[in-house]
Image 1: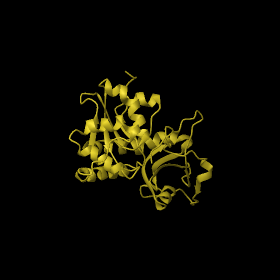
Image 2: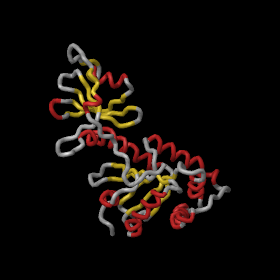
Image 3: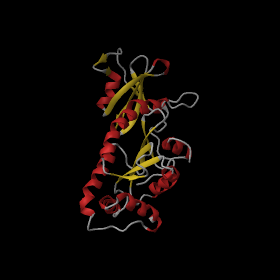
Image 4: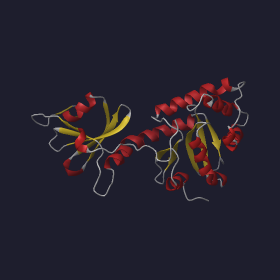
Length: 264
């Protein structure tokens, strides 16, 4: 399904005390790569990918559990691990910062080459300084809204959107995506679809769907492999040159960041 402007955060804020695993050991014995308390998380299905120094003598850990990002904190005595979101008194989400640094940034950097090699449709000038990859379902209203918001940058030649077409929302989403990919001029066909979106977009051309249907399915598999479930999901380079991803329709501030500058 598509998602709205207020997209789901990486981590759901919880009270740390509510998720304490009190693992009572006689002493903080360390075995293997991680302390025993952290190994208990691994035994329960967690995949730990990194660690960091946390406040008040705690050690922080970042990983995934059941496909969702997680953070955990080892108490100074090494006997207990706390699972949840750690907030500083100024409201800084320490957990989210470390999840983005240790888990998401490396994953997104690795994903960029896969996005480049996928079957996408260019939308904008090939000479544009800023390139974004966005997973687009032809029937997604939020994809349509995002494209409308990006239009000034695209028309000014500053941004090229590369639409990785998927079919996840409606029965004719995949056939429409395949029709666009199989067109003699996919960019023109995509533009026609967008211009007529409110009237239903382009008609499915059943005579060509089979030519690119597998490409649409491969795009969907790529999307799933990146842990994404909703469109639009857009990858871009931030001001530091790092790969970032924005799910859903961005707010105006995020939009300028993604587009590399203010509205032309």
